[in-house]
Length: 230
Image (tube, rainbow, N blue to C red; front, side, top):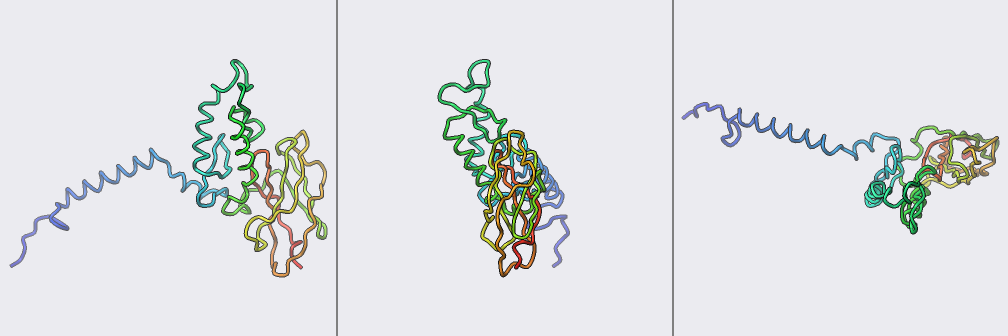
């Protein structure tokens, strides 16, 4: 006996009702996506993609230092509470609070342990990126003469440490090479000696030099070198 056509699909759900239900679900999903931006997806498309377990700190608009989710939550709370921790009519902090200084212009007033945390997060910024060698070129340039690495540049945090690392040399993480200190104008004037590079027997291509402006946690690249090749 042939079953009479009923306009139903699946287990007796009318096709028109099913279409409406799917449309409602799609609209709901779209609304949810708008309400909760795909933060992880945005980060995956960035050259500053964080390793699993880390997110951008976002102490300010372009703060892409990777921190734990708990620290980002803490940072947002500090931004909201900052004015209440200032002396009235001043940028100076009330007793018991200090400037956070995730970058030189960050004058949000926080407890001292939070500033220590910010400095630690800045110092560890290259190690928390999926590929620090994929970051854009910054204001620092590097060159090598023989096995000697030199650097010059501008746009750095004044009077702060600038660290140099090599990636692409088959190490577990960024390989520390040395550091310089930017002058009061945030520059490395002239060409400054950074490190002596030793060749590596298994190195078949160039290495990328990663630059950390430790005063802001900003990670960039300074160029490539073939000095690691024997």
